[in-house]
Image 1 (cartoon, one colour):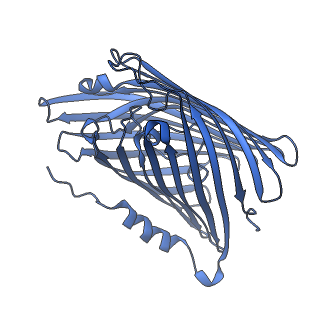
Image 2 (cartoon, helix red, strand yellow):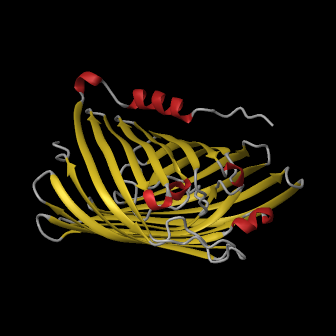
Length: 409
């Protein structure tokens, strides 16, 4: 089975970034480098489940190095953030190590009558990180539209993900606008247990009409179509749907959005046995952000339909919450939690259903304006369809590092 969809979403990301970045001669540029060195203790890093035949649960220690750079480019009409990150972790008692490479891009362009945006992410890492969703929001792209995690990890298996999310909006009148949006995603697996995952390509295209009901309240109605294609030719999913959204801006510091969706999924399975599944469903997502002088709250909750490396489309019910507060001028506290319950919309993948919880709490103290120390706790619990059962891991960690000064404009 062949596909006409883009094989390299990163190429599209580069073109869109160049288009949205704006005139270089008018740009203001800043860079914020951060580097941390840390240690951690895990109670069950390999996430060995209670139902597995071989019990190799063991406390292990790890050493970590995390380096990232937040690059900002601003022009009178655009604002772009680029964040590369490299993280290396070594676990001597488990005789394993992890290397994670990430690139996040977020670019916004505006003129008197139109706006364009691009969100992009490249992520290559072991399945321990890629298949267990983070508790904290992504600092550059906090609301990417898919959750491709499977909840299952295998030692020495790597996932490579590339996602591009462009959109364009044209103001037809002072209150009415028309927009188009798209998603292109490519996921691959490599390593000793790659055969237990389903690499795929996913594309979505949609169009919508928006209406400014009041200066504070906006509404949109749209339609979309998508296609998910397994790269191993095992299955495909075609979907069509409608959406209805509402946005409200209580103040410059407090915003919220509600999105309602309904879709039909036509799943065609080729292997292990040819079959077809038709399902319909409704979803809703609610997001809100509140920024105070000393604290910040982010919340995302609801039901979405998402491609997955477990095979086909999954219905995800999830809740993600993050709260941060400056306790003093030097001491900051952050707590976050993420819950996911994933159910396959095609019965053949129901053995991949799972629910997952990740919770963290962290303290960070600035020794100087740029040097800091910190530490925290993390708890992960993953529950799979029997007979596998549940797996849990508790983490204690500490770190010391350098963080450059923030955005000067």
